[in-house]
Amino acid sequence: MSSISEAGVVAAVDKELFIGGKWVPATGGKTFPVLDPSTGEALCEVADASPADGVGALDAAVAAQADWANVAPRERGEILRRAYELLVKRADELALLMTLEMGKPLAESKGEITYAAEFFRWFAEEAVRIDGGYAVAPNGTGRFLVTKQPVGPCLLITPWNFPMAMGTRKIGPAVAAGCTMIIKPAAQTPLSMLALAAILAEAGLPEGVLNVLTTSDSGGVMEPLIRDGRARKLSFTGSTGVGRKLLEQCADKVLRTSMELGGNAPFLVFEDADLDAAIDGAMTAKMRNIGEACTAANRFYVQRGIVDEFSRRLTERMEALPMGRGTEEGVVVGPLIDKAAVEKVGGLVSDATERGARVLTGGSAVDGPGNFYQATVLTDVPKDAKLASEEIFGPVAPITSFDTEDEAIEAANDTEFGLVSYVYTSDLKRALRVSERLEAGMIGLNQGLVSNPAAPFGGIKQSGLGREGGTVGIDEFLETKYIAVAL
Image (tube, rainbow, N blue to C red; front, side, top):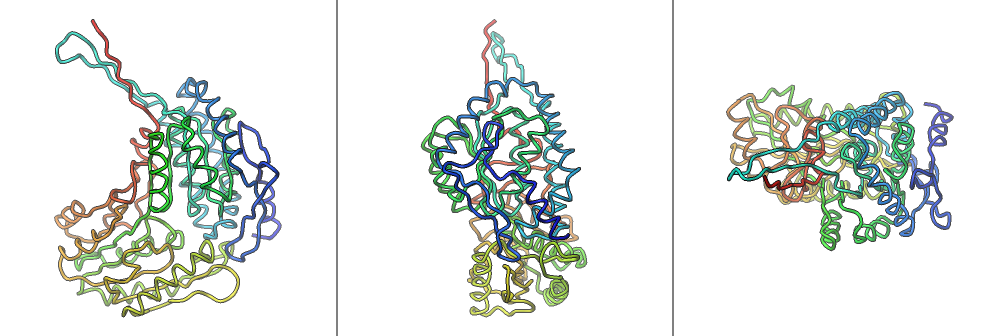
């Protein structure tokens, strides 16, 4: 891609706040820069919302709620369908925009646009399937009517690592259910969300249904909205630490919440596994999004009889990955999101090696501009290494051997997180045994990718509350009402 086309896609995005269907500047005209993580240079400036701007957005969402809830489900679905078609049509330019602000290679960005669009197509179809119930009371003297209604104005907070898909995964069911919303994208990657807001407006979403706040002060802008009392739901994707704070704030008004929080995914490979498939799955589970994913394989547990062969082959694959700016042809390993991310990954690797882990490849940051860290494989990783308990969020694969099935399961479950686990085995009985015993909301059984708009996404323990996607995803944005009828 030329610098002209890069400048063009950035220039095409409205960079003000989107409130009540209008593009407006932040209070006082404040802005903040959006940086290219591959160079550290500013791409542009976007509006920096204040708490007052947040209240204005909530005013707009509240004002639009009653009328939007009364829009026919079919029309809500058709808006999502038109937005889906626009996303597909503009996938190339949206992918370039995402690569520029987030860093992932263009091929991955385009894959994310396709994935993001599917949430709109899925929930376009779910909008007309919101159901209820009719039943005879047990004593026969009355009837039970059950209906579902939109929760009301929602607050949505999305992360930087999947800046388009995490938006559509929340906006899709909210629109389908008849909820208005305020969405706050991560400060590192606001451009994708601003582009998405324009697409939804073009698709016919009424004014005030979607409001977008870009801000460098997430807590200062969002906490007053959480404590306001007029919003009825918060949906958050991000770290467990921030999620805990938000839950405390939501308790003040008993705000309904859904939380997709951190992960610490174990990747179990048994001696009877198809090793070719296991290596392919390991590369997918580890290196998707440069390892910056809550579903990324964080701990590799490989049975002792094959650990040397697995380690050798994984090392060969990791060493062969081209690194560079995400816009360059063939690049697989792009930059991490910022310098802090590079420092965190480097610190975890240093801690592991100091405790006895061996570096098979990589193991250090790359000198020069940008936030690059080498694709890394570690072996003989001790149990007390920090990267065994902390989310890595980078291109580092730590390998530990095990002997028995019980030992592998105990190690896999030895974490406060429970988002996803991966299992590779050719033994059907073992596959079912292990899958049932693993403490995770999702299991990748002989596959390294679990995310799918048609499936329920979410974790247990401190990896979150509720589910996104699938037939249950829309329920997070609906209230169940029971009507007792006397006869």
